Image 1: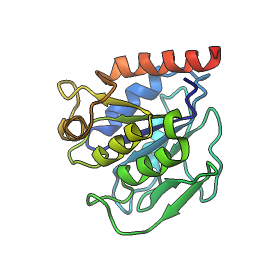
Image 2: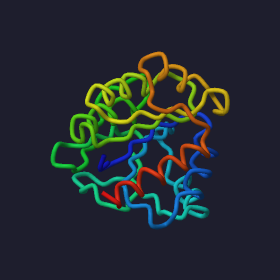
Image 3: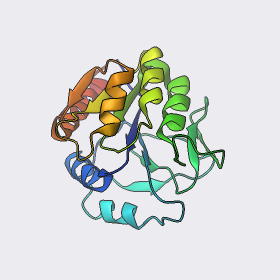
Image 4: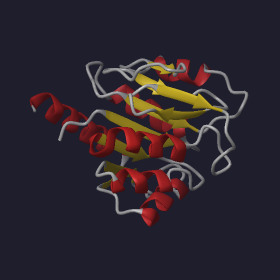
Length: 192
């Protein structure tokens, strides 16, 4: 399987999870990663700068109509829903909150599932609400791969448990094992 993108949804506990994730992925990792981290409406991008201090990859906020490209890590800006369009560009909206959140994980995951179909990897990490549960269901309906952080090891298990209740994930793994899986999937991409 040739995967074209990875979407990640994360909320409470996300700073620690992303610090581990991006300090462990190699700088050569090529599959584009698109992240919704629940943040306050007035949050600045200081947390992105913080993750970048230890990351092998550079995280950046999405710009409207930007094209998804290999090797990049994109983050939804505060107070905007992030969508992937069918031509693999981004759209930002200020539509109603979904699951009390803007940006919403479900909004990103559902749009990315429609754009990438079976070539998408969806990952739910730590979090304290149910955002992302409908999104991973949609990813699986389109044939994509669903990975959920093990609720036993997640800093907050509500979001992983909601995702597991909604769908049957392909993998339920501790964070470090998720990193190993992503590296393996990327190597498979390069070999095919």
